[in-house]
Image 1 (tube, rainbow, N blue to C red):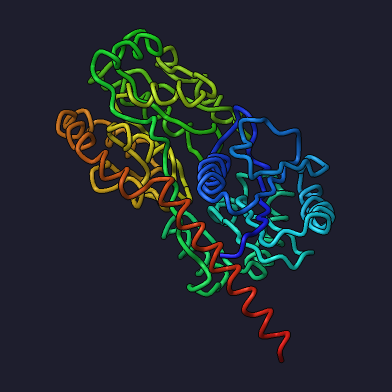
Image 2: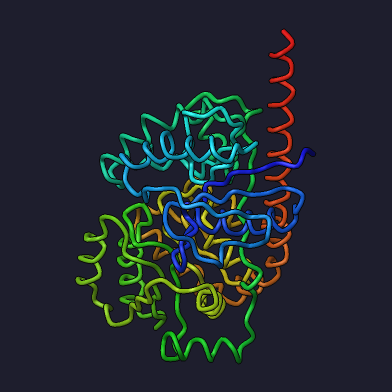
Length: 390
């Protein structure tokens, strides 16, 4: 393959604030840059970067002004600021991992679209964000030379919603950190003492946001505890995100409010411990392009109780317990089912941890992305040569 200068949209590489898109970018680009020293990578940040994200010597970080955290600034950043950078550095290929790209350059582009949640739940995001995505997403999908998405569900969704050719979209699943692994009982006890004063606990991991449906989980947990069949705590790991007021109101009205533990965001070391020591992960999200916390729990050999919606059955596998996320009663029933079959489900979860690692891992993801990048650039060069000769 021709030695390339590869531009990468790294806006979501933010110190101590990595979430879904950020982790996808971090884990895949760390491997791509280190595995392919024959290429040079241009990392495009919209703020000062942290040295942690400069994974190898073949990376040039560039701060592209302004910080693009608003729809008006997204348009400027991608279609005015980026073209200036591209004119200066002349990259051979652009990969954008956040579903947005420049419409003002002719650089071959690989676009990663994680999901189309904005179509299903437009009221869960600010109005301007919805209008921006509604207007520009079809333009991005049309202009991109290749599209990557993270699950078979999301691929089908993109095809159905926008009539994109199947051959233009590749599925590159997320992975999880190898640090997620089963804990022995001694270490589980140590972590439980730190997090829940020694009690068993259910854990939720993710932002507190309407689409994540944490309020419904709280209602279900309250019902479960009222039945008197367990004294598990509920540990909620994540930040308060947009429009979380209703969730907070549900929390304040809970009967068992004192047994709900908010940890805020955790770094990866803390998170691997918290998930590894949990009795089960409960993930009530209404819609996910993938659902990395489900995979992290599977890596850790922790049973999964999660929504039957969107991509989650694809990621959760055959041993998870599924529920209708629109019903608190259904979530409670699923948690009761877990408690009644706890020993068997924990054994199944431990036995399937290796399978999850084998199917979903970042090494596979990075290798597949590289193959897509290679094919995209080769096709671009071949088409350019054909056009020049006709």
